[in-house]
Length: 140
Length: 326
Image (tube, rainbow over all chains, first blue to last red; front, side, top):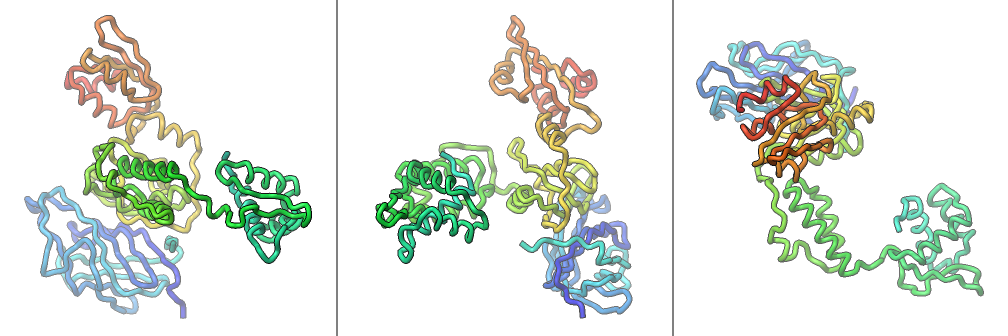
């Protein structure tokens, strides 16, 4: 069985299924955890930029095996029902979601905030992770 | 007298041998063998002779090394001496304190590497000195650093990346384009301009040297990846042939001529904005200045900030961009 020995980071830059979804910037596969970095830019939809929050039930799943890994921590974003209200429609937010470590092998994953969610929910499908494309992070 | 790293390594071997009470009076041959064992190098006997002479004559070490004719070997006439216990004089301690205070004052608390501060404190603690002392609470140099500025959290990570040439991955937010990107860069140096810090690096994403504000860099990670070295001349030109940090795209290095009013001429004479600056003063007290630079956003901003007191003469495109306030 392969071990998650390395610290790998993947540059993704993929938007979700809704126009106002944050962009997935990087996915880190570390022995201790899986971390996903997002960037969110407010839109003109709301005068003050609206709000942002993440469901505590958010999970990542292997799109083939359907193995699920539920959110363990969030940095830079409030966990629902609490929410962060923006002050303008020109604000932005960088945030990271943490999940249990997943196997360091070629895979395709989904990030799901809400199953069968609407366009406002942060759902991302078929993100390919090819180990060969992973950038090895120095552990110093 | 400066001591090279290799010489200092040999001094340490010599010191260790002279302090070894079980094998007193080592000869040059004994020291040579010890160097071979410890350093994997065999210095010549001449080199070792010079090393001993330097240790004796150096103002830093003043090593009391004596040759014993009876035992045909060297020893310290003061058995308590060691190069590892060279005392700091009051003047040395005072200088260290002043240097640390200066760094803190110049850099703002966050910019000083805490480990450096800790290291100095350890040295001073050894000498039963305290730092900071009461005097240092009174600021002698005041900079416009304001607590709470973004991006300094990553200063040490980026400094280390520049120093050790580690490529890095980070997330970046562009204020202009209002978008996020994941970027890989090969850091070259950190630059401060108008109290803001920037990372100058070769960007794989942009395939060119780019400048990134530290406030827009999120979570840099050192990467195990081949470092891309940029051409030294290109780096020098990018960093030095500019006023500011963000060059205007597709604008080459060029001569910029501007006229200053009597009110502001003295400031430009006292504080040149670029090393290439030359002046030609008029009888009235106004002055023509020329600088040879790659035009930047910051240069336009500077020119505009003087309103009617500064007029760009050429190039024409720059005159057009700045004349709105004339």
